[in-house]
Length: 322
Ligand code: GLU
Image (cartoon, rainbow, N blue to C red):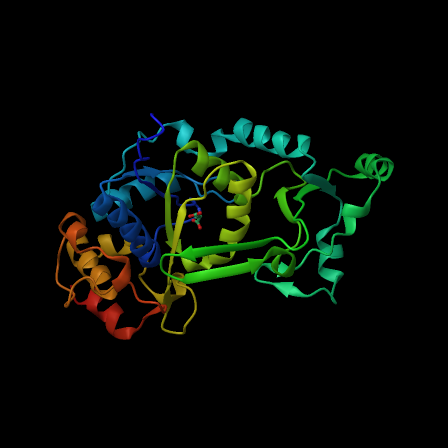
């Protein structure tokens, strides 16, 4: 591509195959898809089965089925290259690059030890790592490696601040030393962290736009830092509010028939669901049946609610009455 040629926008749908897609996933995916189709961009489907232990059997097939039912498509062939479980060599290369640049160190702390750092302040994702293993000498590292295999942490330089304008959540500013500290990029069992894998993949796949649920807002600064470390321009981020159950808690099975599969099997039409989701995002005035394609021209980040949507009894009965 010539330097002067602007990069074509590219977004992604990045489900983890740990269970069936539910209404909340459907809304985030619909929005990510609409954002790209509205911009004339590409959209990639990538299955994030990094943690093979947690991957549910056939979950990827089920996800594909749910997405097709919703009327969402993607521009890649879903070959093995788009499953994170097949991309480990690439992640190992990225780890080696960071290692060569002196940006990693082995961490031998056990979960128990980490939990016992009771006095350590907590950030969004748990206690801030106090840097215990950063101080180990090479000889101490060698000696401890004989007893157990270490995890690897990315060194956050003191005072590192990541500032970004999230297209939905607004201006975000985070000093990583105050929120996470040095963070894990590879676990002791050798599996790379979600943070690293997602950055390696987004760079390799030319992703320019990430639209996803705001449960991942706290991950963006670490990901932006990794993008910059690899010399890549971070994508533009849009973190959209989640859908919650009527008790204000993240959607789960106990909230009733919220899995797309259940809705489909109980006779809800995809158009009804799409219409309801679009209405819940302020794209249309009434929850009338429509298709994802019909919404492309209606899409705007501005109408997306800034607060989580509660899936209350009236919403559930809306589906039940179809
Ligand atoms: N696979 C992650 C999830 O399902 C999403 C990762 C991302 O969008 O960065 O929660």
